Image (spheres, rainbow over the protein chains, first blue to last red):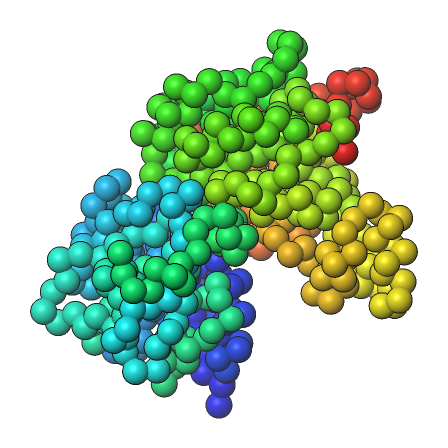
Length: 188
Length: 301
């Protein structure tokens, strides 16, 4: 059976994640309401503007339903703005977060768009993700990682993909390249 | 740096430019003239702000040459907000664009709202680090701008008019042109490209994919939450609201309402909720009262 994967659809690159999911063999379901979470195998918090998305979460009263979803043990992947939403705390223009992932997210840590870049993961990345090219767009950095947090990939020495139990956070955009290995890993 | 530095691509890469445009989908980009307005826009849920000295309605009312925004205004706005900061340059004025690129703005709008600096040529946008957005009234114009390196297309609409009719016309035109291209046979594409003045490789892309190779946003005359939702319903992937917010009676409520209606454009009850208790919208202009020479959308080649 094709698994259904939710994508938080308040704002951001929902369409790019939907394309990546289709390629990885899953059905994308836009999530705007608590009831949209029913029957999902996993959830993606996409890239976009973390301020915009966090304000939408307030308006739609989605904080608790998303925390409950994460507590159910099903995989949750946050990319860029989505990674910020998962973090314990945010530095540099803080926004409210779910506070589930034991890491500090530093917003726009590389600079403005003129400092955006792409690069392959460093040697030593998790098996199956070797050579993955990561697209960083006004990207955050993840710091002060807790003991429960596993670093799956680094770029230029910094953690860019981390995992804590069922929670995955990428500071880059796996949905913007044709390589869907990370989406497949989330589904496996 | 690390051993992988050789595989690094910097901001000039087209993929990274389109990537930022992708991040703005489903959102509202707001015109602002001061750091305080930028803060209100950010707090209302804007995905980006456009830094300007005067909003288009004032440019239209006051006349004179409209140029790139004063640098200290852009810098003040960059300091105030964390969301992307865009700024406009005159059509063809590549030095204004180099200045904004050096300043590190997140997006440059080569805009018909400002007085054109070149009456024949647009900027060669590919070499810049900042991505560019350009206005278009039809598919040929959109593909010419993309051919020059634009990473986002928006309708021109009629800026500062508070009248949605031109944005609707341009959205329908671009999307209708796309459907017409899709209906062609492959061997007809080269002649079509010649006729519409567009690069043939991009016409082929549209034929194959049924969409532009970059995000397609709406701008020009959006004044109400229902206007924003109308543009989304007609295929826009995000909206720019220019004079519509800070020329209205209660900018903060209207800004929030436009964001709400853009997220929930498929839900009439939510657009209704967004439309309640907003105070007076900006004054609008009937198109018939605008002389051809006063129409900003006619600028661009």
